[in-house]
Amino acid sequence: STLSVADNSLDAATKPKSTLRSARWLNQEGNKAMSALYMDRYLNFGLTREELMSNKPIIGIANSGSDLAPCNRYHLELAKRVREGIRSAGAIAIEFPTHPIQESSRRPTATLDRNLSYLTLVEMLYAYPFDGVVLMTGCDKTTPACLMAAATMNIPAIVLNVGPMLNGYMGKNLIGSGTILWKARELHAAGEIDDEALVEMVTRGTPSAGHCNTMGTASTMNALAEALGMALPGSATIPAPYRERQQVAYKTGTQIVEMVYADRKPSDIMTREAFENAIVVNTAIGGSTNAPIHLNAVAKHMGVPLTNDDWDKIGYEHPLLLNVQPAGDFLCEEYYRAGGLPAVVAELLEAKALPHPDALTVSGHSLAHHARAEGMSWDRRVILPYGKPMKQNAGFLHMKGNLFASAIMKTSVISPAFQAEFLSNPDDPNAFECKAVVFDGPEDYNARIEDPATGVDSRTILVMRGAGPLGYPGAAEVVNMHAPGRLLKQGVQALPCIGDGRQSGTSGSPSILNASPEAAAGGNLAVLRDGDVLRVDLNKRIVNILVSDEELKKRWEELEKSGGFIVPESQTPWQEIFRRETGQLSEGMVIESAVKYQRIAQK
Ligand code: FES
Ligand code: MG
Image 1 (tube, rainbow, N blue to C red):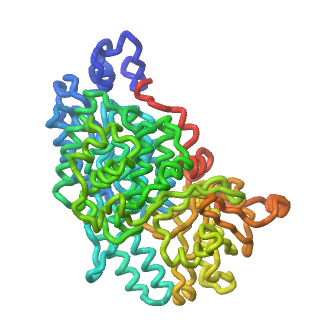
Image 2 (cartoon, protein in one colour):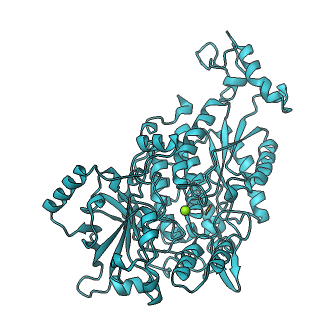
Image 3 (cartoon, rainbow, N blue to C red):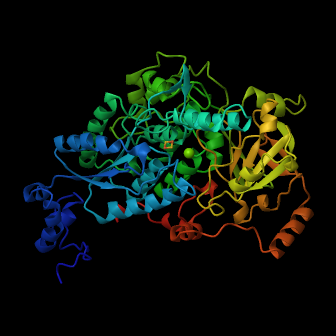
């Protein structure tokens, strides 16, 4: 029948004269019956035929907020201002939910849902009559999921962050969301605070609507979305409850309509140059170790080559400029008041450290244009000058060796205490050797860390395996492990950690993480044993097990004979599909069969 909804063929005869994508649904020249069918259900909430047939652009509002996703829940309010912006610019808004991803409560781990949210958003954007989309982001994985979908789809798209929470306090002390959890866990393990105080302390980090107020993965990914050019300059850091957040929601609505008329698409913005800018910005802000995973994934879907080597080569030698937790002292409220990301970019520009000042943003102007308009920060406690930074050489190291092919180390959080204990050999100041104590997943760590039989001492390297994309599944944020309480009491603050899982962006641990291939994918982590010595050389970017190749081979034969590296069974259909389709962390942990679908709106 002519009214089959499956009929979305667009042969030359039915192709509308209009250039708007939505007209293929709603204003078909040769098939008015189909147009009527597509249109009538959008009439039933009050839109009119005149609006739908007048070639006004249709703008999606992809809303990631809900009761289930509290970090992004304020988007339910912001969407109203976005809608007003879209309407005032002469377009029609259609709001819809994205698959929710709540970092702090999704079990077993929220990264499992990044690819699911990506998949469903691609389907929605492809299958419905959208000319452009506002991507409402915030909590950690919501931002990369949206950017990945925008890359695959390639219709005009603009990011609107929900914004960070206000400052949390306990007495006069700033309490940073996420970061306080790691601190409180240590105090609790050392017996300094009880259960009640632990809960009280952690929940003080949640004082208002918004996402984590630290430079965790949420603040990082939204800063990088802005650095890539995909959000209005200055928009990423505005705290959720500030009036400017509502105002930028409105401007985001008007901007997406202009983008549709200008046909300014993700492929015009998310170029190789834009990713290089984002890598440098990530160093300057002390961004999360989740950033390489997510940006490599976005680049893959955009068809832009980007590897962990790029993160080291382009990012390592820049300084840390931002004094925000976990690498510094303050929180995002001061960061915003100090000028936000444009002030950081202005600092990089002044030092000629931004690789591509002319890279395009959603506004139609360059990143540099907006940073110049904003100017340098007035608050040098929070955004430091490039020449007098928090820390030199503060980017990620890309580590390799016989334990794994690729892992990331965040150097901006290396503490003076860690430096003194592990990096103070005068003959070899950038290397250390440690005996490994190996844990099989976070449950094993939690069960055994306080057991003296593990032999953990002040010179141990803690190893976490079975926590990668296939092992966990989804790759758990568990590599940042604290020392046992008895060592914490002696003042041992940080032991080196290494693992095939991830680390929370709010953690200040100098871990070596995202190790690929993971133990469950045949990495040598699977045959590492307690007492093996690991050599870590930061200059040479090498992590080696000081065990002979013959011994490793023998261990692999034994492991295979005993049935191979054990991972827990999948508990849901998606976990099984995820494990079947998904690659390693170093490659962005994308659904590999999805990568070939690029710029599909144009096809
Ligand atoms: Fe959602 Fe940190 S838990 S942003
Ligand atoms: Mg996290």
